[in-house]
Image (tube, rainbow, N blue to C red; front, side, top):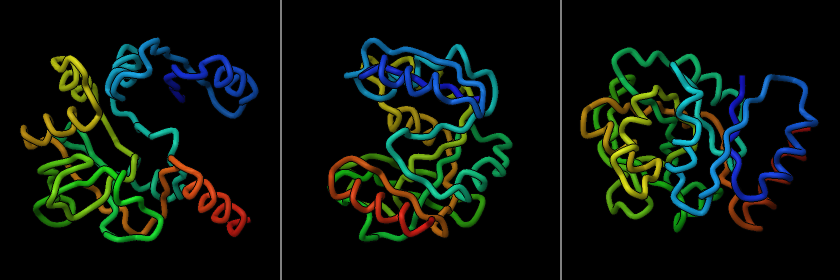
Length: 190
């Protein structure tokens, strides 16, 4: 089952969803789509009752990365974030990427900080998360919640783990340069 939160260009996205028949799609709507992305995530909260995969719609991701995140057991953790440790990768826009600071090793690597402007970091946020409803609880107290705010709150509780997905390619498509890279990547993979 797929849940899509629509806001900007909701009608056009809805029309594209109407053409999709491969899976069941449930729609949520955020009329305040211009606010931080945590507001859009909260629009989906009533529809998520257990573990779920949260994916950024503007990221092109190698399917193996999704499979790795689905297979990752959360245990007592409330959230897992797929991270890429290839700092300086040419596909990454260093001025826009969400940075992640971690500590620990292997499956016990904990997120200690996340944000676009943190000065010390050892990984990039791939935009693929395994979440539980605890993320919504972490977002609700903030007036203008961002996803990073929710991750940060769970990290302070020791409930946010980083999953090393460095072996898998991904790309955040935010500008013409990234779109050109994505187009070339897709063409090469055919």
